[in-house]
Image (cartoon, rainbow, N blue to C red; front, side):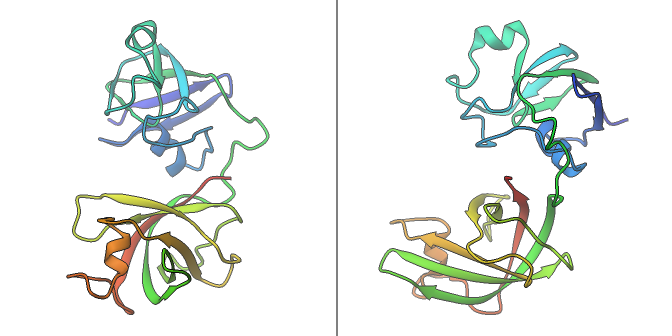
Length: 204
């Protein structure tokens, strides 16, 4: 049976799938918990374990010290439940607990790759699935890098929502894993018609 996670003081309960962090499970079920980097580098999702045990994926000790972990603090973006949990949220927005746009896994087709400057490209994607995918201004998606074990890069949408497209502004970096795929001279470069996986929208 999947672990159950109860959040105090907001009186919300969710379930966690295997190998799913508490934060991702909350997103999947439509709950907008306060978060930042989602990589264990900041402290936005730091919370306190009242009951239960977790295993943490790798994180920065600047975000959660060993002493804090021993006291019962956890980073929800890195926490994998080993049992049912009761979590006391340190930060929450009572007026913004439900996600306006559920976070989903989707696929999008490359429509255009356009240089804006020598260092900046615009990647235009047409959402293939899910049908009706939309987002709010200022939100972002994680793009799944082709040929990797679920490696991702995060990009904000630069277009107005509602037309079924995602305009992503990508900066070129020497040796960049994703920006390199937008260079037509790179082996395995992305081309118009190729499809990419994405997850989102994140942010508020």
